[in-house]
Length: 215
Image (cartoon, rainbow, N blue to C red):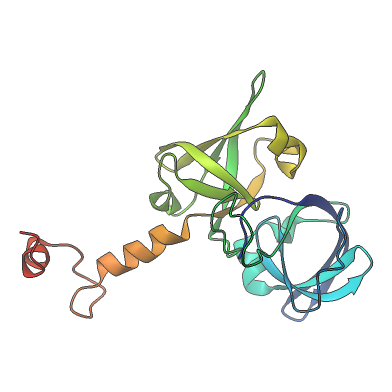
């Protein structure tokens, strides 16, 4: 579990294909003394398991499913990635609840640099925008952001200077692909509302509301 508050920008130092994915190595700008084998680190969004540690470098396993669902398949040696270590029980939740399980890859369709803030517009595929609400939260490449607006399949966010300087978002260009994690609560609510009498079909009906005393 993560908060979407990036701790630092790392650099990919090795990419080694495996039978069903790859091993990715990166350096971290912070010490890894508190990280142990088997711990989780979010690498530009995806939650990945640490399998090797050497000083400030770590190696993680990336499965075929993760490669299919994220932009990690397009990374190369020297690529910069947002890094966040797993949330510790008792830490302040400064961003929002981020699982590190990427829903889809979005396309950056607009980047507007203002005098203070930078605005990004990201197009989401396959109607994933139904899980995004205005003033709700979204994680883009592992960064917790507040949604300014949702229009169709496009989501707009503002990036403050601090976030720009301490993440890879500042270097984004129109046409770049971003890892997107929508609010996990919305997905659970949708599934619960779709179930009626043990069936995935039905949803909320007048009969259902009446049976539970709402009508």
